[in-house]
Amino acid sequence: MKFIIKYGFYWGLVGGLMSLNGCFVAKKYERPELETNDLYRNFSESDTTNIAQLPWNEFFTDVHLTDLIERAVSSNLDLKIALQQVLAAEALYKQGKQGQLPAVVLNGTVASSKFADNSALGQQFANIGDGQDIGRIEQYDLTTNISWEADIWGKIRSNQLAARASFFQNEAARRALKTRLVASVASAYYELLALDAQLKVANETVEVRKRSLETIRNLKQAGNETEVAVQQTAAQLNTAEILQISLQQQRTLLENTIRLLLADHPGKVERGVLKEQVVQQDLTLGIPSLLLRNRPDIMQAEYDLINRFELENVAKAQFYPSITINASLGMQSLALSNWMESASFFNNITGGFSQLIFNRRQIKTQYEIAVTEKKRALLAYQNSLLVAGQEVSNALLIYETELQQFEFQEQQVEALTKALDYSGELLVNGLATYLEVLRANDEKLAAELELINTKYQQLNAVVTLYEALGGGWR
Image (tube, rainbow, N blue to C red; front, side):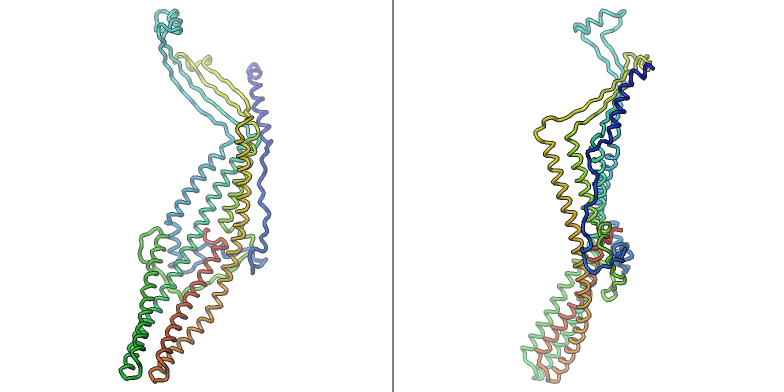
């Protein structure tokens, strides 16, 4: 009973503070209402899924490409750096989760003091005892210090939620980086196949123009053509040879770029051929609101908004007093032999509050900055959604346009191939000029190169659409 009376006040103080713990001034985060229905066109209200929900190893079917992406995802150094940032944010999040627990410190000390014989304490201790060296005393301490702050205004809780949002923000950033990495590898791979195809056309063109040059030279010897025709045909051959060298250089540089994405040294890249690349998946867009949970950059922007929202709560709570309880208990003794006795036990508990009255406007400034940062994060979140909608619309438009162009360009190449064959026969028979043959050669080469580029643009638009919808990180 005596113990209860003696310490009842302190436990009542603790209970009272804990009962006030729910008096938060902090607000609860609610997702802003954003209009998503008109973010992009050509979607069906019945589509509850889209291609972004397919893992990249199911969306892409070329085994060489999936092998390259697998290697990039496991080895890319930028992705590994992002993972370390996530782990650091996770550590802070785990620390923040313990914010409402008390801090407990255990201290143990042994002190030995020898007072000067002529000092006041030395004279005092010299007059007692039975001839022992009383001037030296020893003290043994074992103390536990406990400190706890009552989260009356929600400051600690808001700090916890801010740390949590920061962790998920870093994780979303890592996912966004993975999405870009997958898209970069796929886009570079298709471009490499396009360069292979264009180089093949250039090689064939060089051989054809060598034969054309030989034909013109024979016609000159027969008196049917001039040296001007020979030199212009030779210049046309040189143009094809220059293109050949340029394409070889671009191909090697692109191989090195892909190898860098794999965190590997420059070298060859195993690959297929462009004409075998097909889009086997239905390009379902899904409803625009799916972007909120599919696009990592939008998730990242929202977690940044949540983080800023909670930090505003923290800044607001700074205007209110901090209430803390500090306690210490342990054992003290001048002799090790009786250190564990009940008479060596001590304890104390204190409760108090602190309230800044004047600190040169720092708290108000911090709050104003927090409000501004929250507004900035909200605008960035809104903008990320608008940009995502534009990217989806643009990628779909490019894909559909390139698909239509490809059909007509195939017909164009077929017509120009026939025209070149006919003009070559007419030249040999004296019914066409070398200029007509040169023009037919140039038009056919340009059309073939453009046809290959259109095929690449079509495949790249599919990659861009997959990325724009939020695919690649799963």
